[in-house]
Every structure is written in structure tokens, then in C-alpha cells.
Amino acid sequence: MEKFIKLTSSVVPLPIENVDTDQIIPARFLKATDKNGFGDNLFADWRYNKDGSPKSDFVLNDPKYSGSILVAGKNFGSGSSREHAAWAIDGYGFKVVVSSFFADIFQNNALNNGVLPVVVSAEFLADVFLTVNTDSKATLTIDLLNQTVTNDATGKSETFAINAYKKECLVNGLDDIDYLLSKKTQTEEFEKARV
Image 1 (cartoon, rainbow, N blue to C red):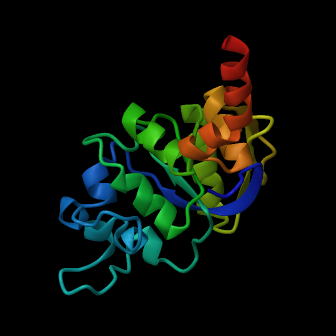
Image 2 (image 1 turned 45 degrees about the horizontal axis):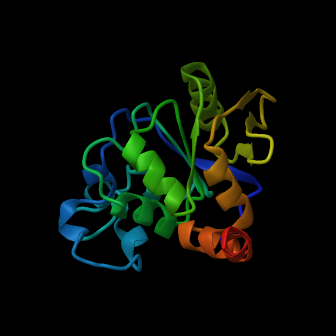
């Protein structure tokens, strides 16, 4: 995984509540067993017509919006526990998803795949949507070390919570296996001391 310390980026607004994992990545795409290509099918039913052509009214097809931060409505990632939803978000190029609430399983799957879910207040979320509607190039700054998210246009900032272990993994670019391997010397020393 890539190290994540601080990110400033424009955002892609998705002001829809209760987005479930089947909307994030429809079940028909779950046959693959590796992460390749999932970003192409992110929000496929909202993003493409039946003939495969892009729907011009969907935000991912709107050229005025870009960036590596997805800002979503409340209750993002509900529904089934498919890890493929996190794969699709990461595969598209999003490094952060901001919402006022995430489903627990989605939140853990995102963290396990190097995508940072940032929980903000409903008021802060509304302020971000308003800012982006006014200026599609407006940016957010996510500072993982200080656990803050800042709306750069307004200067408003909030802190967010993150599990200390997952924070350490993201900051150091480690997945769970890499983390265990990084502790190999300490583990071996502990074992020797117990003999």
C-alpha cells in the first residue's frame, strides 16, 4: 500500500444517502478474484447506460469534477460485506471517502485496502457540498497525522477518529501482513527471552 500522511485534493461530490455496496459495485462484477479492473465498474449502474455509454448526468462522467476524494451522503457502504466495494473505490483512484456515517464493514474493508474513510459532522458535510457546488475545483485537506479534515475554501476544519493500529498501517503503507512482518525481529526476541 502507499503511505498516507497528508492529501490536498479537489473532490467528487455524491450527495446521495444510503449508498450500498451493490450500488458501489454491482454483484455481476464480483466474479473476479483480484483487484484489477474494479475501478472501471465503480457505480456502474449509475454511471453507464445499458449499451455501455456513459450517462452524462452522473458525477463521475462530469468533467468539471475530479480528484482523489469522494464526498458522499450519510450511510455510505451499507448492505453486503463485499470487499470489492473498497477495491472499486481504490481502483478508480479515490484515496479518501468523506461522509457523516459509514457502515462498519465497509469502513474496515476500506482501511484494509488503503482507502481512508473520514467521518465528519452532518453540518461539515453540508458545508463541503455547498462549497463544491459553488466551486467544482474547491479542495479538502486530509491530515492523517493530526486527524483533521479542512475545507480549504472556508477554512473550516474538523477532527476525525481512526483506530490507532489502522492509522499506523496507513502512515507506514502497511497492510496487515506487512505490519506483522515489520514486527518479526521483536517477535523473535520475545520468543528467545521466553526460552
